[in-house]
Image 1: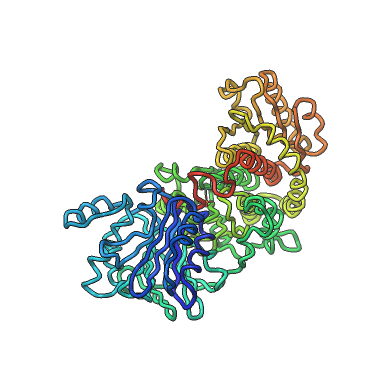
Image 2: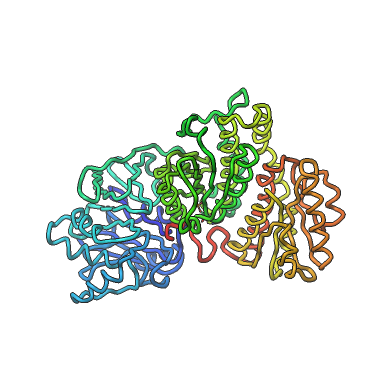
Length: 615
Ligand code: M6R
């Protein structure tokens, strides 16, 4: 939530920062703002609404040229999204400008203290207190870095901050706690950002800041210390993708591009992990075989779409390892008393690796002694650092707020993990594991085949544009797909949608069905799961008998379903546990198309942000 970018160097700082904000806008788009230091004065422009509003303002009321600037794109927490609450925030004398990602939990108390000493606060945000506190600390040391050190010692909560000052015009100071902040190391220029995409067109050399660290940047130097002033340990790395991965590349929408990239993302996630003998080769897996052999329980924790991947992981672990497994919504898990110990493996799934609910759940799991494995798409993320081991999905940057390729690669990762545990524990025949791995290797081709059904899916979607509500039903691995289909529709088309386990319908939800109600059914494989197939055919008949209009997602050659469904979207024939990899794709297209027809912003749906860094 909220994108932060800062630049110091010889280029036009404002254009570097605005360009960076364009790439970070997926993190929040309630308002945007920039500040520059020019001729020893701070100048700010900020505007409610998307970045384009700020760009028009900058066109009408330009800022002077500068070599040091900061920029922010906001997802509102404290204070409505208006011009005043937009970042950057300034102190009363307009000498310190601050941008922030996170929530300062003790801001009310700090605000009251400031007001008691005669400070007038202009906004309703928690962030503004930092600008005033910097102003009161600065005179003591005449150092922005030292003032920042003092200020952070007074803050509670999640606060990644970047500040500039007219007092030290060539300096950028950042502080990191609980939300991401990455340094980009350039030649004669340096960068700070919430995510490397903001500066990847300038440098691929990055530094991952640790928790509770302060960074001081000039065009020529980078100094990193801990909040207490001691020397900090940090990790430098090269970014392994380039700017084209974060651009639309001829597609109308990022989401459509990312849907189309799914076969490649799946291939990349598998690459090098299955050897020529059909054995899983997890050279990048940092949990020893001895530890794996001791694992007695596997718990998946995640939020939103990633939680749906966790549900699939639970089915895969049960199937291949015969270990007890659970999938839990991270925000619930975090406040419960889960039964965990050192023989439990907790698998935290998160595309961004920055979702606060998931991070807090990880902390909770570690406190109970569990081993934590992260499945994340983001190198250098907090989750990767907090976990005992990391399994990276290799989806590449996902820019659209609605998760697509990240989800499919998470599904691949949980399947591989389950098979790997089974391989190390030797609970499943090697030949069986080998057969599933062969099937997994074929999945990118199967997804390609499904992508060919897009025109039919779009036509079907348009037919339902006036529906009040759309229900999705599935059984076993089809159930998380139903949940995912409904989530996509809610977040993109703003339509009421629910996903149900098909067997649950008769226990209540069937009362929702009336003449014409659309019901989308994920049909289990007739070949691999004849019993479940029969059950879902009964469920289709039950809703049809009450007037529903049924769209079935069913495998090629399943003619039984054609007798009952109004429309059938064909899927390639794949084993049941792999079916989510093909069945989810039409539902992504379905939701995107309905959103488009309704005139919504598909890549940046209302009220959402890509990376949810608050609880
Ligand atoms: O970055 P994460 O995978 O932790 O994000 C979790 C959810 O916020 C995310 O999957 C969300 O549900 C998506 N916008 C759904 O498309």
